Figure 1 (spheres, rainbow, N blue to C red):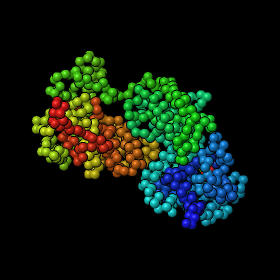
Figure 2: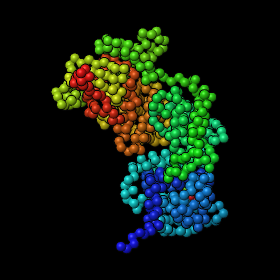
Figure 3: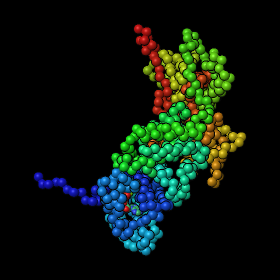
Figure 4: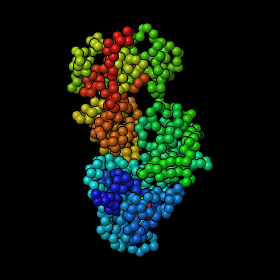
Length: 613
Ligand code: ADP
Ligand code: MG
């Protein structure tokens, strides 16, 4: 047999390598901006069109390249940043592989313009799919501009794999945040389809964070400062009361490079322990400076994961630095967030002993009754119950007035659920609440146990979806409009979902460069913290969109249902329990919560019989 092994031609090898470096437009953005930073730029401009699919351009005022270097920069393994392997252990630049430009040029049309300080004429260069199609002298400002057009033009499979422009823009923005936060001493501009999304002047770190995330950030930040032999830690954490359910403002940087580190994240969480509600995450912007030779950024191709020599020590230092910051700025003792029913001691069910089955709970139920608890506690608990009740009722009221009118526990939808027999929920149905968490009722075949939180999520979810499609969410006009602050990026996202929000019952007006004025909110959100709700909606939308699975309406309905559903720990009056059971089984998909979790289980009589055998 003849020899069959061949060396791949360069352009094919480059295309293959490109697959690792360039996953999506955001990867190109990262590489180009990092090159500009390595070239010591003081102002960097990012221009994208159509989520980066048709154009990604980065313009810098850095040191530029000679004509020869410009040509060479597109060769694979061409780099000015390291000369031998030893340099890998002492990196002070972002790049070092010499692969980025070669990879990008293999899969796109690239235009480069560059000039060094002491050249009179600059160089202009065009490359298409690794082939240089033009190189000539040109008049150009000092610095470099690289424009990448028609990404993946020669790999249709990859191009088709790209998500919507919105989603790609989201990824680009994430990448932009990371570099912008790592380099407050560099000015950044970011244009998308001709609009300026960010204009970040050179400044200090605190101001940079505020410019990126909006002015409301300013009051939330608490400085962290710690210097030891192993590492210097600086930056900010957000006050515990602003911890959020969704991730979004957690940033670690090691030697000015954004990194991901679940381990160090854990250290921060440990410092916040006891200060934040369960399931919430505090924001943080933490900068670690360690000796360049004690960190290995080489273990991951896209370089967001790193290896530290002495991770355990770092963990301890970081945790104590954060704790220290929390203590020093008096954040910890001043903590005074709203009473959360989730944190109430669980109802001691056992105390009720044998009378259990007859107990019907009502809104005034108070677990502290037998103790002579402080008055404030008692009132708090009653308020909670009332809120839970009305909240629940609001959702169900609207259901009743729509197509589900007339449905009650004993009619069709329930039967469908138990289609093996002619099961129905009993007529003289009574429900009771177990541990303020489950609603228990009987059906012909045995017991039905409903998770109150998930069930209400389902009810609200379908309600909001319906409102968004038929555009008639009930709105509660506010007596005094709320003035809320959002970053320009958040405002952009808000605009994307504006129509949906309006149909759910929100109403607001934008002011140029001013706060958003909220004039009306959905009826079921009336008592909530509206800033937090909108923050959650934006964050939920942002996250949901990047996963690209659900429609915006579904994402919003899901987020809102989660925020507004009765929680575990809230006492429900008998009628709201019943209303919830009815509401759930009037839903189109009563079995699962909007997050695909079981809303109820059944325990058959025979299951119970078995236990008694
Ligand atoms: P790396 O950054 O890993 O060295 P790249 O392929 O990204 O590899 O870039 C190759 C080389 O081109 C760099 O080492 C640098 O010398 C030069 N270069 C790239 N972009 C710029 C820029 N914006 N300004 C000046 N020089 C640049
Ligand atoms: Mg590079």
